[in-house]
Figure (tube, rainbow, N blue to C red):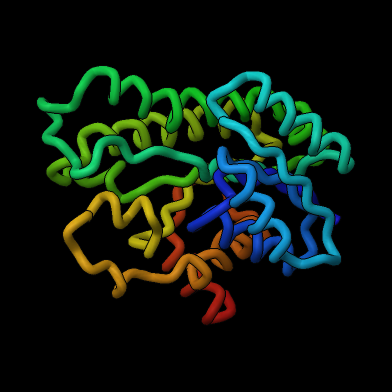
Length: 234
């Protein structure tokens, strides 16, 4: 069985990613800060796979070590999905009005933590020629008002992933853009809007599994493009 770590798996995209991988027969190590929500999510997935919930905060070094140990206990690691992330203050402030402490917290969650987790599990990924998927956003490539805190963190993680791909040629490193998805984070970004027209997380999740299954060259991929390629059988 292939083995994956999925962070931020108690809700939204993380929960959908984990559920989709479980249905496909993957064993999972999953985390979230809310232990009860994580246990509830894990209990709803495919009972034929091994699922190890590890509640905690990915910004804590000890928790990252726990995730690595859990994966090793299952037999190794084929995939790390860095899904956990933070949006910052809601409503989104102008970049010049973003409080320094809020900015520091964004970088800690969205850049420092995923890179530190990659470093912690890298020996496991090397051993199985695994893959890293870092969740990204179009806010990393477009200048949207209010996204001056979140967007640059994704720019940094995207570029660090490109460097990692050069440094570790036996590991595939993907920046995965799910598009606009109906999640709590997306609602927080648009607190006064009806986001019911956005894609459901469950409809987007198969794109990640298909990307990892195809294993194209390391790079940046959009869910809509991955799904379109699959549909035409390319």
